[in-house]
Length: 173
Image (cartoon, rainbow, N blue to C red):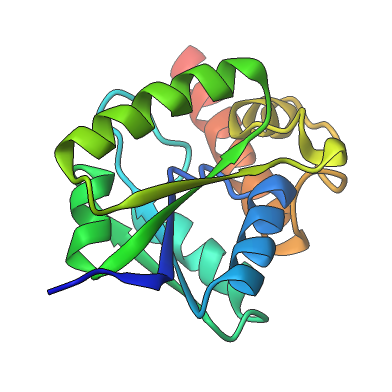
């Protein structure tokens, strides 16, 4: 069966989702008939939020986009994209280091499934310095998250950071 070129999949950890991610989702939703946001599990990373929590946060953030769905997945992103009969893998780029990584990944994905096209969207300049790692650090140390994440995500990050501080405090006693 031929893949649908009007269906795109945007995969990532989204740990947590931030304004840069939301901007790529907004722009992708305008370009494609259907956009699926795939919340992945990377066994090499220790997640701040569990996959189900990340899905829940993305569902809250994406409810304004009528043609966007949010689904969890594990395994190879290209396999997930194929399972959805999507013809496009959507990726966001912030920096030159992103470009190098994503270029290599797109070549690998092309070797795995040459029917799936990778489409890159450049980050808007105001989001180009955002990363989930930076946002977790800001939240952990009590910084202002408002410029970086939607309100529902800010609340979740602040709560999770407080939980972790309380756990660390109990462990030190």
